[in-house]
Image (tube, rainbow, N blue to C red; front, side):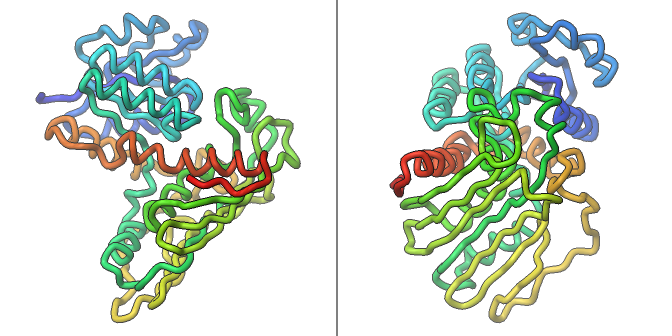
Length: 340
């Protein structure tokens, strides 16, 4: 397969990032986009410079499309993945893969049956500084892990929700602050700390007129005996850079806004890079997030297809943070610890 033809389901703001990445990648080209809104076709054509269809069957029957990037509403990822798999297309989906573990299981099964690859975009795993943290934890340089915390104390305006009414709904977003904004950092935490034994959650809607939570927290117990906390919000003005903290018996590392701020690893100097990203992050404005890590995920997915290997984050890995967040929501509702 000399060149990977890519189709995109969705025409929302995140699609600009994908189109930019595809334009910079060798061995990939944008073939077409799909939107369920006929009114969006002409506008999207001008914006993205590619054919835009409102007929899913016609879109998926295009033989030039090898990979479908799913960029529609979170609660519609599942059917888009399943339909793409039935058409024999590999799939790379935006996070979350779906809004419940059960929907994710159906998507995984569809891709397994039709023998196509399924990947999920958790692009923050590609950040060089996070990879350095991951390596240290994997090597055991911090010793036995004691505590891991993730804090995504962000802010979103009323306009953010009004502009896209599906945001913050249970049907299409699955919730709000945790499953939309917080899931990236939760994924990073779980990738470092390992499987979760139980969670006790408390989520509330305190400011925005939405169904999902705009403030929430959870206390987590990991299978390895470590403990931790996760907090998330979209009502925490003005919004602060996300934080990731890992404490071990021998040392600790803290990250803020994707950057290492504290490096206390015995016998190992803090890593440094000549160039630093200029992205301001998504603490108060989701459009400030850069595209470099998305480009790395797309590159990995193309490599998975051409080399016949699993993608960086497959369906099973993408299910893990959704399962935790779902349990956290259940815990808050039932006012008890939920064991995973």
